[in-house]
Image (cartoon, rainbow, N blue to C red; front, side):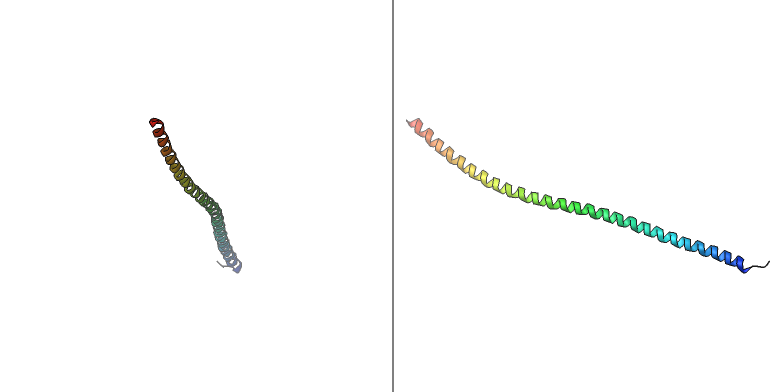
Amino acid sequence: MDIQFSDVANVLMTAIAGAVGWFIGLKKQRNDFLSALQSSIDLLSEKNRQLVEEVVLSREENARVRSEVVKLREENKALRSEIETLNKKLENIKTITKKG
């Protein structure tokens, strides 16, 4: 049984081709995985940008509402004071009309 160089070369070439194919497939699989990860990162980054924008808008609205609440409290305080003054005047008028 003589082993020919061409037989050995064929076996080696088949093994080498298989190994090269396996390495290329592994690299492609890694690249596909990295591509999928990058897509996920891009999607999450966009969603995060949208959420940050919403938070900024909510904070601005919150600041406006707080300012409005302060103004309304001041207005409420002034109206209470005015009502108290008018009630005192009304009491005085009632007292005058009762006496007369």
